[in-house]
Image 1 (tube, helix red, strand yellow):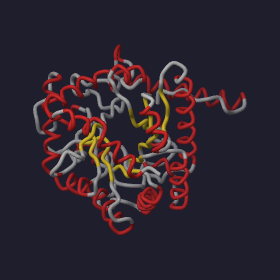
Image 2 (image 1 turned 30 degrees about the horizontal axis):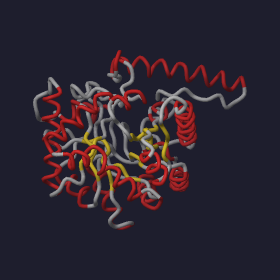
Image 3 (image 1 turned 90 degrees about the horizontal axis):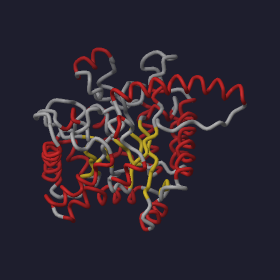
Image 4 (image 1 turned 90 degrees about the vertical axis):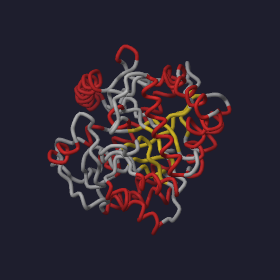
Length: 371
C-alpha cells in the first residue's frame, strides 16, 4: 500500500485514476498514521532501510487491494468482481517497478523461484517474495479462480491467504479487527458461519495445491480451516499449509489457533508464523509493557507449538507489521528491531533453534512447495 501506481494509461484516464487513487491514498495515510504505522516518526515499519537495520533478509511482500475488499459499489458479502484480479496484478507490477528502482541503492531483489531465492541469499541481498492477502482478489467464478491462481504461480507468488477481514463469498473468517470484540464483529458483519469454504473457496484451495502455492489458513473461521484440511486430504494428501501471522489460543479469540489447529498444521509439515500484534499474542495474558514482556509472551507461544509438534521445526515469525495491528508488541514495532529478537532467541534456545525460528523453518517450507 506504500507503492505509487505507474502511469500506464492515456492522459485523461490517468488523471481520473490519479484523482481516485489520491483520495484513497489520503484515507489510507490518515488511518495508517493513527492505527497502523509504528516505524520511526510514525512512518511505515516495513521499509528496505529498516530491513537492513534489523538484519531481516527475507520478507513476504503482501499484495492487498483494500478498496476491492471493502467495495462500496457492491452489497455486503457480494461475490468478488473480475476486475479485482486486474487490480492485484497491477499492484504486483507496481511493486516490481518500485523494487527495481530501489535496487540502484539497495542490494534487494524480488525472488520468483527457488533458484532466484537461493542466488539472492548467496549474494547477501535482501529478498522480497510476493504473497496475496485475501482470496477475494482471485475472481467471481470457479473458472476465473483456477486460471488466475495459475497466472499468479507464473508470476512468482508463493502464498495466498484464503480468508481475510470480511465475508466475500470465498471463505468464512474469524473476527480480525483488534478494536472490535468478536461478539460485536459477528453482529455487525454477519456471515454464514457453517459454510466454511464456498465453491469459490474450494476452487481456490484446489488450484493452489495444484500450482505449488502455499495455502495460508490465517484469518479462517474454525469451520473454514477444518474444511480446507479435509479438502486437501481428499485432493492432495500431505499438502502442507501455513498460518503466516497467528497466535495460539491462550484466551478466547477465534482468530487464534487451537491446539488441534496447531497439531493439524505441524503434522502436515507446515509452519506457524507468530504475529507481532499485542491484541492476539497477549489474549488471556497480561499486556506486555516492555521488550522483555513481549519476548516472554512469544516464548510461551513458541514453547506451546514445539510441545504440540514434538520438535522445533514449525515455528516462524509473520509479524504483520504495517498490517493494522497497532499496537504492536513493545520493542518489536518495526523491522529495525528484529535483530534484538534474533539475539534473544539465540540466548534462550541456542543458535540452531534460533536460526530455525528466524528463517530456516520458513525457508524450508517455501523451497518444498515452490515450483
